[in-house]
Length: 98
Image (cartoon, rainbow, N blue to C red; front, side):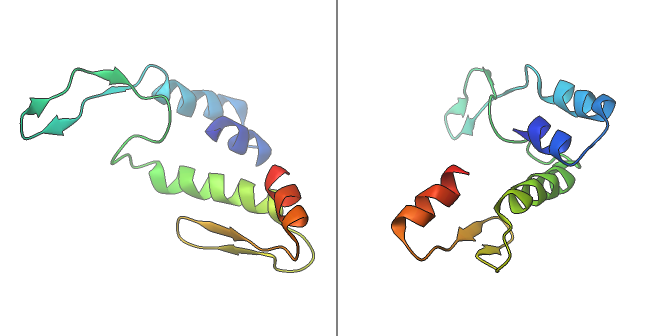
């Protein structure tokens, strides 16, 4: 998804490839009071604590906002959320599918 948003905002392909290569094959463990889990591949989300996280988050939110934008402010963006407003259930479902 991050690569789609970066391309949507016309980020140069070499940079998209560089960011995506950081995420390819990423692994992590879960720490508990009983010790760490075995390592497993991370297939969604972003690297915890990465300096790129704020920038990548902004890229994703900007791409999503551009997809939802209409003449009237029917979307409300929050720090880590978006609210979609519609007058009917059918319109709401249509907007979500878009």
